[in-house]
Amino acid sequence: MGEMRSIRLFIAEDHVAIREVLAAYLAAVPTIQVVGQATDGLSAIAACLELKPDVLLLDIDMPGLNGIAVTRKLAAEIPNTQILIFTSILDSATVRQAIEAGARGIIEKTGPVDALLKAIEAVAEGRAYFGAKITQLLQRSMTEPLPPPDPSDNLTSREREILQLVAEGHSNKELCTRLGISLRTVENHRHNLMRKLGAHNSADLTREAFRLGLVRNLTNPLSPDQSRPPSDAQS
Image 1 (cartoon, helix red, strand yellow):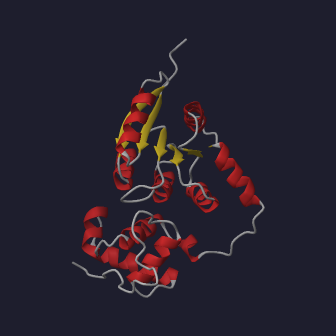
Image 2: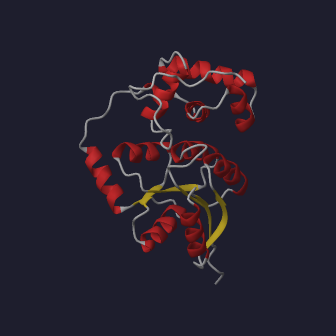
Image 3: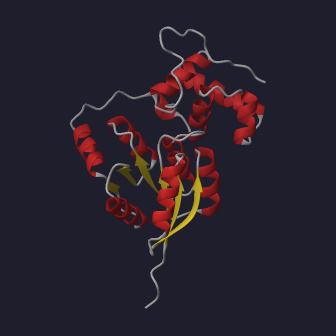
């Protein structure tokens, strides 16, 4: 009999200590091959598009692009790469967003290590896997009334990327450089974002980014005592 093929695993986690411990532990598992690591969402996308791992172990709270945006992008581009969300952010809205974006599984960071291994093996085989706390959230959300249609449901993955980056304060020219697209394309995306979301300026777009959970690590610039909107500068 031939040897069992290793699961090609990519780890995207911005906390260095957590990532290094995970990589060292998982690399020692005979059935797992750690093929790469990333510290931010954009790097994770670029590396996974090139490496096409079997499983992406992905934190939600990532700089550059968060895990929901990364999931949505990669689920569309490389559907054979199964995405396992590894998170400490536990709320029903985030869980629903991750599943809708295309995550095959979600597991909490505080869970036991053997559960992580089971989750990786399950999603590698195309099966769904949810940690105990995640399952409870899903069961609870099933009893909640369905929310009304959200205008953000019509956003493309690129528009969501740009919405997050705008909320983080990046100018149009910076978006061109980071995303490898032209200034006119960026301007068209921003115009479409404002039309779809009923926004009139960058402050409105930033509100939407916070509402959708695309930005978590920044101080919310939209609190009542802050009236200064982010810049719309083109430079």
